[in-house]
Length: 87
Image (cartoon, rainbow, N blue to C red; front, side, top):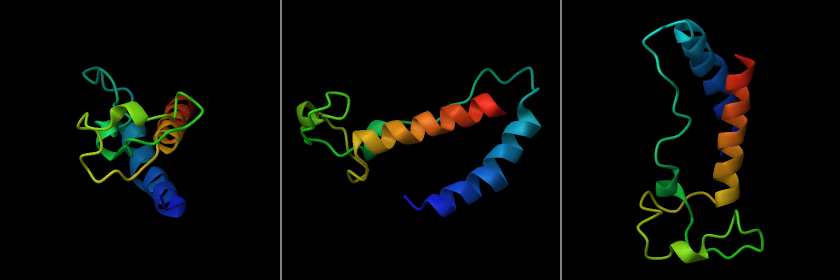
């Protein structure tokens, strides 16, 4: 959630790694985030159905401590996907 730390990681680790490997023929793809549902806050009602996790109570989602809303995770994935387009 600390955007300065996230930006530092992107600038100093992620971008150099992607640039170093982007021509590697054996690399089939990049995963933006592994199992985001583990950090999802479950049981949260929202009028936007894309952000509503009320139906996920008892599903097993949130096993990492229910740290982020669906909207935060979606924004993170969108921003990382846009970064990939720029590289």
